[in-house]
Length: 198
Image (cartoon, rainbow, N blue to C red):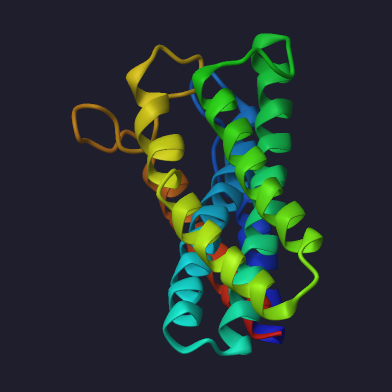
């Protein structure tokens, strides 16, 4: 825990002290070091939830159900944080917190899908029924994640900055910025793993 905390502090320090301003964005680029890792964490969490949901349907053990639900809760909080940081970036760059850009719209749909999971789970009182229904819902929901996060937003014009891996298949990012971003993604993954173990 201490090592992870120090690693996280190091990443934050690097974002503010080492990462250079980006062309066209200036210091606003620093928001991506929070925005991208939280989005990444959400995707990992939703796929992890589906994995444990499948495990529950195979073995009907309560620990798999609890792990699946915990992953969704972590993912839901992460996707909310990613949406908030994206809205702040939007306000600072385009003058509005929300403009129904394709990426904003698809992430909103994702929030609704997993918000419904949490609502459904809290509405079913019988433990076994809740676990089974939640597992099926998680497995169906995860099918939407690749489309809503990676595919559909790239099919339409978007104000969103060019993704790290652009349409030509090349990475166009300052080396220092790229290294810090990759380390931030590793950090987010380790934080998720730690939260799942608690």
